[in-house]
Image 1 (spheres, one colour):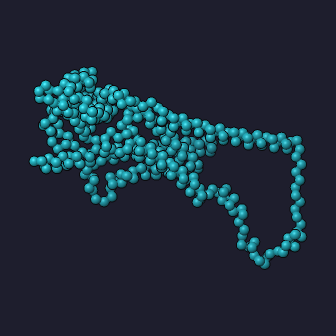
Image 2: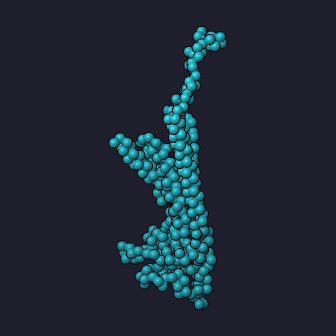
Amino acid sequence: MKTLMLNILLVLRYLFCLLGAGALLWALSFPDAIIPPNPAMEEAEGITLYSLKPLIWVVPVLFMELASCCGPRRNLVWFSALFTVLVLALLAYPLLAAWRPEYVEPTFVYQGGMLTTGLWRYAAFTGISFAIRKMLLAYMFPAEDLQEQLEVGFVSASALNPSTARTVKEIAAEEKAKRPNFQFKAGDQRNALRFKLIVQRMLLRSRLANTCIGIGALLLVLWCTCFPRPTDEEALQRDLRLMLQHRPAANGYPLATSAAVHAAARVMKHISDFESFAGMSPAEAEQWLGLDKLPEAARTWMRDSRPIELDATNSMHENRTRFLTVTDGRHFCVLYVRTNEADGSIIISEFQDSGWDAVADENRRRTGTDWGALYR
């Protein structure tokens, strides 16, 4: 019964430690999702939770430490959780890179490194943890059995007392113990053979386990490096499909999904960088985007051309037209166009994002205000 309870406690500790390891990877990869950037807190004085944002990863580490220390086999629980999350993250990495790249790489330059940077930090933390727990602490605080072995060769000060010393003749004249002469019989030979087989079986299991670990690590590396990645054209077609996803809002207006706004940002940036709409009419641009596949209500909402004020801009730019807007209610992706007055064809496309990072929006808004004041 006691053994069963210890095993149940071990599993529970592993699950809690696994939860902490997952939270650690999330904190290292997406700190802005835990504590969003806030311009008002940037100038706050003193130590606040916002100022401690770079150290938010310490919280799951302390939780893991607490879970692993509530019983025996601390290192087993600790490293089992760390490596489980690491393996799962590496398995998910190529899938996310192919279908949801916003989790792997930053969509905008002002964002953090996302899962790519988080995985490197997590792997470094695991390596440092292994060096500290399995090497440094094991050396500084040896186990009890090892401590006893170290004390075997110790000699007390009383044994080195000169008054109790003996001469070489006295030591040589001392009666020596008889050297035992073992006579192995048939039964003893069978026991020795059985012991030899047990040792060979243990070595075989150890080699087999190491081989399986090596093969698993090799397969994991091949999975991460050889998983097929979409080409630029395939990625663009994927994003064109994703950006059309929407859901009904409480006020009846269609709102984009989280995947849709990220995909829209990548599509609009591609259009702006490569001037994909240059020479097209607005109708041709709509067909290129696949807006004709949307319900009329969603298409009308996304093609609303009325001026809009964004947190990242200081004016509504009357000299350009809002052509496409994709928003989930908080994040905005807006594509502006400038058209030829003669035939109405599109000349230049400009991408504007807002609502992703309040600090970046505030900085861009101030920069736009300064430039506007300079040219007044």
